[in-house]
Image (cartoon, rainbow, N blue to C red):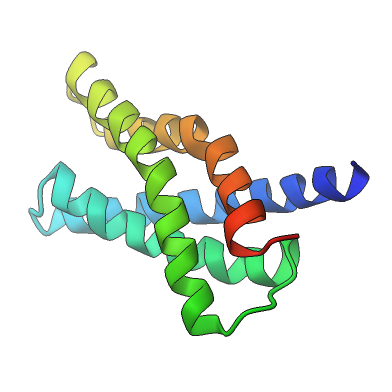
Length: 128
């Protein structure tokens, strides 16, 4: 149980770094007029890349080849991304437009998908 708690804590810290990457790339894409959904796709990929690199090094034991592990991680995180994107979309639609709204929507979506993503990473990607 202590090992899982440590993994979850490290996963959460990696998630915070990923959240910062996510928001940074999203705002960069929005600045380049990508729109909130294409920008979100780009920012999601950046966040997944960051969190994969951190999680394979600090939260879990990497046992597979990096290439195959990356694809499994991307697929596993895509399941949580559906929940994440749903919360992101609802947040954008329900709240009035503001400069901070995309960041809030990303943060709420990330929180919504966090436990599902942790369990997916633990059971299907790293098997630890």
